[in-house]
Length: 144
Image 1 (spheres, helix red, strand yellow):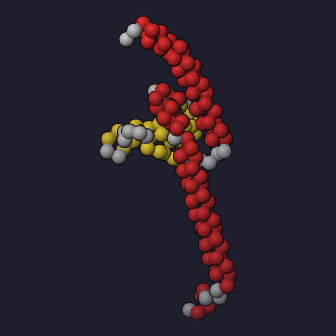
Image 2 (cartoon, one colour):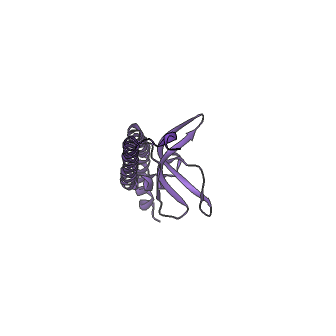
Image 3 (tube, helix red, strand yellow):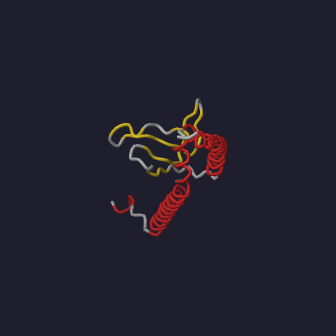
């Protein structure tokens, strides 16, 4: 490596570190914006490697739990460790996590639509059962 090549790293390192600081602000802003919609839906997306996932989940921090962009690692088999904030991950994982946000949002949208459909179907069924009950003659004790 020549001294010139080494000196070219200095401005790159500075820019990389500045962008990394902005990366944390971006992650915090995205987490807050998604959480503000109060969907309460946990989603996970596979990472580039098999032993971790990027997601949006309730993360414990001290005495509180907040919804955040998160990461979790595989403990063994199909058992996952508790999630932690994406902000606490390595820079490479934070960058990869941000690349997964569009997929996470689409996944959340699909989950929300599924949950809405299930609740609406259940409400419709309950209304039909209630209607059927009102239309049936009360056989009760009179027939005994």
